[in-house]
Amino acid sequence: MALPFARSPYLCRWAAKRLGAVAAEARRGVSFKLEEKTAHSSLALFKGDTGVKYGMVGLEPTQLALNAERFREWAVVLADTAVTSGRHYWEVTVKRSQQFRVGVADVDISRDSCIGVDVRSWVFTYAQRKWHTMLANEKAPIEGIGHPDKVGLLLEYEAQKLSLVDVSRVAVVHTLRTDFRGPVVPAFALWDGELLTHSGLEVPKGL
Image (tube, rainbow, N blue to C red; front, side, top):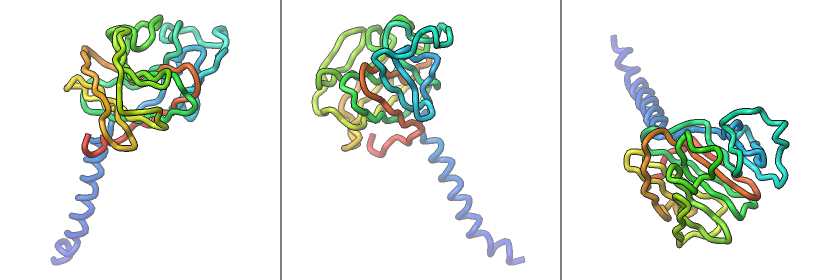
């Protein structure tokens, strides 16, 4: 009769570990890949559709599947998973790019537009060695961050906020006030080099 009680400490430890794993999973942010069918013809996906690289010429439009989801005028690609609630954090490794945009956009943003030029996308842009916020084609400078190897993005849906995070200091550099009215997706644009995304991450402590 004593055996069940003898096992109970082990069962308790197993249960605690299991609950901890479940809690950690619940804290993880959105996990996504890049959606090839949205990618402009100048962009190519790589590393299991988690990275995107720019090509001056790009793919011949005739070689691409015809669909209404593809961006037609600008070098933009969207993620394949939408967000409708919660706090989410992902990172972007920047490789040899001097001109790019990272942020979020409505899932039904016009495919003839570019992220940052309308009121349905919220973007941090890097160009000419400077960072800016960008909304409805209006730019505002961001201080305190140079050209990084990696940046973080923190999306807080209910709080209506999108923040640019300095990964080296684990600190928010700038926060955009948003106006989410429906599902949004991570969004990317670039005109040289490569971007590699890292999703499904826990929100760092202190953010």
